[in-house]
Length: 300
Image (tube, rainbow, N blue to C red):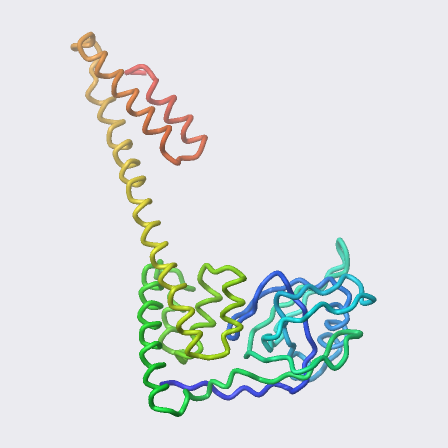
């Protein structure tokens, strides 16, 4: 089993309060900063800091920052993600704000808030120490089975996607190159999940619990893709049938030959084609062209 290089975060972290998304270890997200304490954190810590340590933040999810620093801090979510600020972009329009690009490093737990102004700083305890699996043989065996099951579903999901897309091909390679214990967080941040589900994964401090919680999310995504593929197939077949029928009617209809006998049959064909076109999902402009085309008198 692969291992992760030990990550050691500072015992005190400035806290960035967020409520729009959930940052998981190993994932990257953009977040907008426009509230009083968060703005102070960016200006005082990120823009003026000169060391690598000054770019490490404690990202607290599900906790809105009060609009004014005169307001008390709300109750803070217990578990957060230590993150590296990779990029800071500022703007004064329509009001002063920053956009941060942050990458999650590991989980931490707030021990106590040391100060609230000008931005909150807390004493924290690092929770993720993934450099090795638990030492007991039983736990290693159980996690090994969960890890294999998770990996199987992850590979199945990725291989259902378009492998010609560079990002998908890269993700497939990551499944083999990254440590298995890092994959639940990364896959949860990529697949379609709600913020509530991401929050549950963040709060799952136990690696075993993370594997167990993430596998159903992968299975759900796989089943959703299977259903999507089934619903798309009939539409593609219908489009092919409409395309095949149109030229046949125009080519085989010879003006003046059995015209009276074929008129009713042609009308039935037109009705059928119009019905297919109405139920298809083609753009409005294409729909108009098709209707105009099938109503055009033969030979015109």
